Image: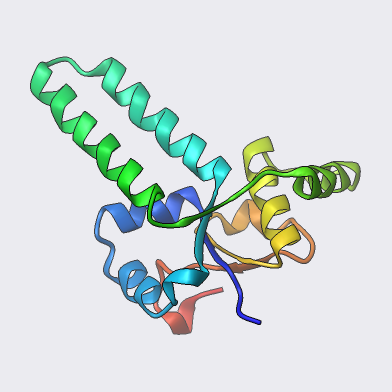
Length: 146
């Protein structure tokens, strides 16, 4: 059985900005085992829409609409893991354990735990608090990664 590698929002942003280490590590993962969570989709699209709403010029708006289009194309090309009943149950269990992590991050962790996936993130400070969650940081050289 192969394993899902789930890009957190921070690593998706690094990928979009052309981070060479993230690009190289992602290229080594078969496409069928790459994923994001629906939470990351929500965070990224909300962020893109907020920037569009704040655009001061039509050229800025046009540039940001292009970034939104690129994000939508990316999301149409990668598996999106759901926040389903199993993830909700896992989330509730983590909350009962008094895991002190923000709601969105805890939802991402819950999805990864239910899918037995590896979360690819730089947010080790928060995600390290989640028992059993497997984490990798691709923004660092492999010998320095978590």
